[in-house]
Length: 178
Image (cartoon, rainbow, N blue to C red; front, side):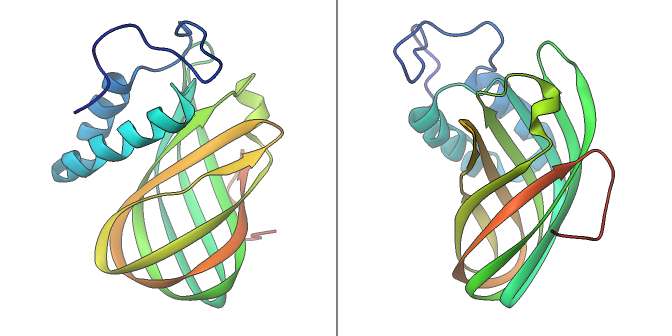
């Protein structure tokens, strides 16, 4: 089910990085965080690992979002890294598209190619699509200067549509999504 056996190889074919997080560690952390949604989490982490390799940091938190054509998203959580420890982090961002609905989520964000913990404080652009009533798991990807952030969300709400937007990470909470 998960890629747990044998040596791990990253995107460029190099041996695994001791500063990265193995899929098993991510899934175990997610089990504690997400609770009963563990099977969906394991499959989603497996797919992210297949596409991007092992992350060198991750974020656990919660967020809320809503949209009627234009939308906003606000969240807060903790950034986990191997060499810089943990730190509180906040995110917010606008979106625009064919999108309507609202949701509240528990969120795990896998972060790839983060050179230092301070490099997370920037805007990450991406495309998001949602189609659910009540809830489920979803995965998207946002990028900036070679750093990839992969939000994995599960929560409750109703959402339908596709949008373009960005997530802006900050050290302090703010109501300004721009």
